[in-house]
Image 1 (cartoon, rainbow, N blue to C red):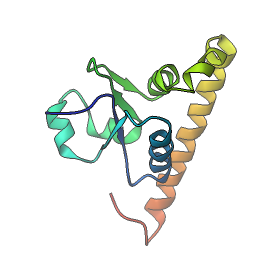
Image 2 (image 1 turned 45 degrees about the vertical axis):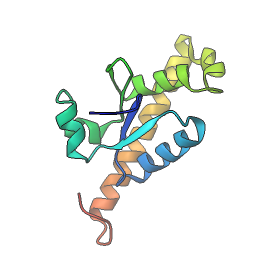
Image 3 (image 1 turned 120 degrees about the vertical axis):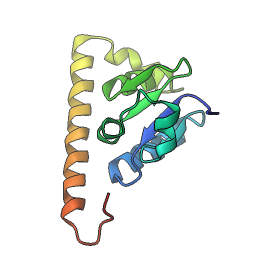
Length: 126
């Protein structure tokens, strides 16, 4: 098991996840992206749950800490060059509420996107 940390697990069949990955690749070349559909990651990290990883973004830090959903956003805000300079804007109750609201709306869009692809005859099946 040789990985370059931090690892971000993403679902390449989810258009929103794919765009999230593409945007992060431009912001930080040190992030490693792994497909959450790849069985190898679950044998290397048995504490991960495949369905949970497909449902929410997961990040594994260099210390092997597993972050999920909004925790990933917090981590990226603290560590991404350029973005971390603005992280102080979210360091209060209003900022936290805004970040949580934004994350919730992105999750709703992702779920809606997946539902539409399940109803589409030309979309790939999981």
